[in-house]
Image (tube, rainbow, N blue to C red; front, side, top):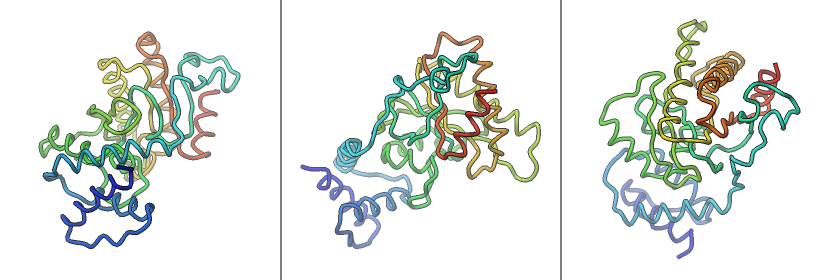
Length: 264
């Protein structure tokens, strides 16, 4: 059975469940409809054969992605021809966080930990939950048990159909108005808690997203400085536990901000 047939199994179930007709004809239309339906879908029972079909579809999709080996990324000392503290372990990379081989990636999500329910939203929470698969939302629902994760707290899960091993989920501070010292401290604690979680779970290669700088509106320059300073301070006493700490950015603007911060 090819990947489109596996996708058809999932789509037929989701469409029947939602009471809609499957009018998608091309493969791309089917992928778009699948993502819309899984994004909107509440956590409820689903047959194992449907989950297995989605697993096979998503894993076959990895062959269509340009995958990056996190261990092979050049550290900033080599990439930028500089010599900074921990620059032999810190990396700066612009790429799709769902396409990197590593031990763990960071997901900046919402307090429910169930992912983004907005159809085909481009936020990192939506992308990670979509391409990990329905199993991730199911697992997070079991762990959370109708509770909520507090700002700066973390939760670690398997990555299911992503090329990494684990996902470390967190809730970053949300900025409503002027940036305060409490906001800065909350973001710093978020990074510390993630690093502690990674260390305690023997994660050697860790990929950070730009926590709180999207929908949570944390100023990018200040968030970058907190991220870089906190990682450096943590490595001062925990250097032996990590082989690579990777800052993953999505835009050229973010890359430039991190590059400037690191070279300072």
